[in-house]
Image (tube, rainbow, N blue to C red; front, side, top):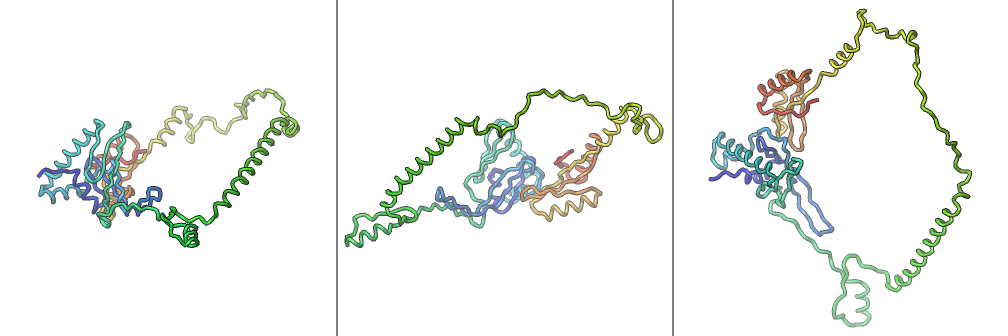
Length: 336
């Protein structure tokens, strides 16, 4: 049986909130509640919103174990199938092609090389599996005016008058009388506004004369900064350090750079959907003499090792030791 890695991701998301394709990225599922669209007249059931995160590349074993069980594969064979899928997918994405994940969505790269994922209409919430959108139409109601007219005449109308939405109780005769009155009032207000505007433009010099302060158009020259102290009087710092040696300007610059050389890095060594597994790794990092950091990434928890470094060589040496001790596929989360 041919192994189709893309077909199994959608099925896994029914029971998992995170499915990582090692070396490629992770699909994160977030539950959203029911939604009512009054404009389209549509009611949507609770669902799972699926997003793609290309930073989640550390193997958590979920996808490999699923392939081993479904296709009766060994662990090595399952990992080889995943690696082959990742190579083909990266090649398609680099060629600006779209990868279709059945019952899930489409993945592609934009012109800036950023991953873009478009989810299809499938619902991966197992509690409402099979329940689709419900389209509702507005309720049609008969007007009270037509009912009273038919009752007074004693005749049943051939075709019942209907109206969508709430019933209007105002008589049409009163509306026709109010409409001309409102038009006249609007015309009066507009004429008044135009008269006031014309008066302001015509008599602006008279109205605002004397209200604004007069300024002389005098050019102010830039002041020349003068030294606060003469060179002979400035004896607070005479160029000597605590030990009596003259401090050179270049030496001061070197000291300032040495203070700024210390930097800090965070190396991600594991990403887990279950926080208990993340706590186990954090305990192991602390026991190994390192500082552990927990990073929340949606529904997943990333565990990182934090350490300080002074030079690029020291950073690389510590980075290699972290990978050897905790995870060979560890990656840099931040480096400042």
